Image (cartoon, rainbow, N blue to C red; front, side, top):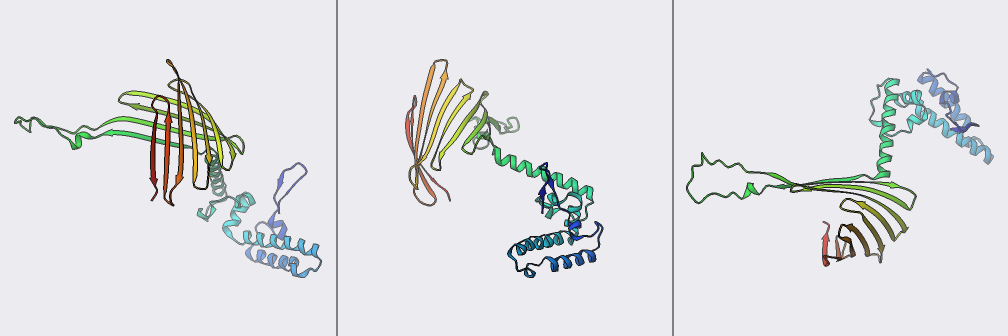
Length: 288
């Protein structure tokens, strides 16, 4: 087992010392030490509950030490990195003929990959790229009504990119209930470009609802308030209030959505939008 010294530094127990064998011990010496310790620490040899419990700990440690030292691959990892190397995921795909230096380098690589996975799980990065392509000329070619010489009027179809949009967002957990989200968007349409940057903080109120406050900058400052609430087992609602500051004043906007699950694969949405362009719409989404 592992323990802590007086300064709180992690101390690894030495399997070789536990078996009382040299570090270059042969397989025969390892097998002999395993049999000796197994007989000595077998729980069935003790009647007293305290001694029996202590024997179980030492017996399990004996089996663990033998499992590592009797396996050439695990033993090479243990000799180079100790027990922390054995706890690293990914060794099952590593070649068994690596040298101690190669094993240490492989361990460092696996540790970096593990840290990167943890970082991605915490930040939850999301991104998308949308490209609008105008390929009308491929399917609709116009010809003059008059006679023409095809050799003098060769027509090559024109394909153009009319729009491009790129979005990216990351999350930064502040506490167990508070999460900050940072996002950005760049887009261009027919030669006109726009962009915005948004920062929002979401607070989990309960397992049934949350609220979110956000600020954006791009086409003028924007303040947003969003809320979500589960109403029943099959119904939920969300609301979003947006205040956009423009040179002509404040432009408010309100969007409310009520959704219900109609069956296992179908969800219906009723959305009302208030503001300058008020509207109401219904949407049915079926997931097959």
